[in-house]
Image (cartoon, rainbow, N blue to C red; front, side, top):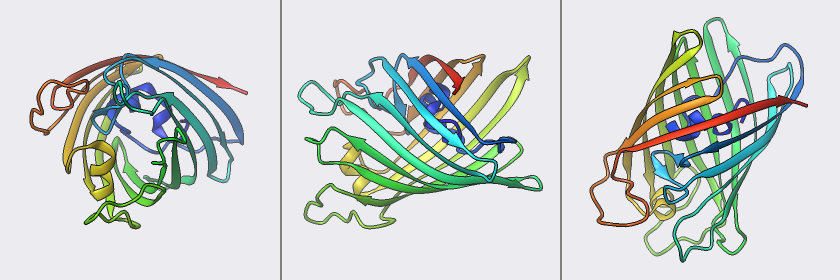
Length: 239
């Protein structure tokens, strides 16, 4: 996404490394498209470690308001009914002195048979190359099991990121995040966990190394306890 990092293959690989960008000087509509060797979201594969094709469209006004949509193929296993993820989001971003900020709403839509759509609200603050981002569960169509609580704010993801230019427009990024809550466990199939990563990107190309603190769950299609290496390429277009 243009202001939302999921648009970027680098950001997808590094699990939403940074949420905001500087405001455009005028209203604009852009599109994006890309491919990646793996779709990593918050440290976990969303494609059973297979490739992904992704893209979206964004509108950003000079006031700081933005709205957009983004889509990717997903695969959670041979017997799973999920085939796509389609996100819709809107928010407001800007800068005050040296502090950048971004606040918004994000809806995750999946195959209707899955009956597991959900939404989050998010906020991000940044200064220089550092950023702190928090996502809170807003609502979901998924049903709670006994002992679970899918209420507002009962699941969260918090990330800390740092990025900087190292050579001729090449950007190096570091990321650490923590995902927790009953809904996060129900969706991911794992309890609260830490994810981390390092990435490098230039001219649309990206390479990321990501991992988690999850224990070895044995042989499966996900290997979410293992360190993963992801390469990708993305392009942006003005409409």
